[in-house]
Figure 1 (cartoon, rainbow, N blue to C red):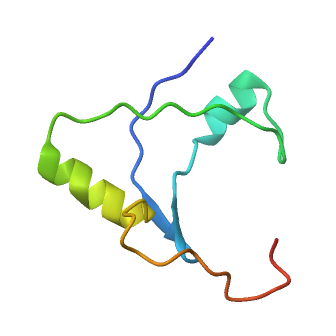
Figure 2 (cartoon, rainbow, N blue to C red; figure 1 turned 135 degrees about the horizontal axis):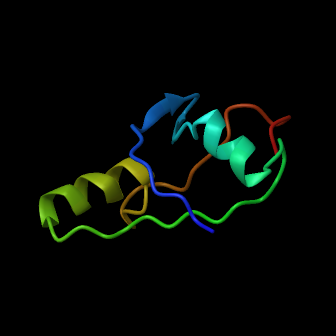
Length: 73
């Protein structure tokens, strides 16, 4: 069984995240720490794709991601 819902990307620390509604979490029997699979459909809009690639840091010209604190692995 899969669920489809609309969600807004939110800033969580230095990342972007999606909040999954509690009704879906409870209905599917998920618990904190569970591994889930997430599918993100591609877009035909090139400008949007470029912005998304920039946001997630996939651009090969960017420096590698470095953690701010060594205790967060």
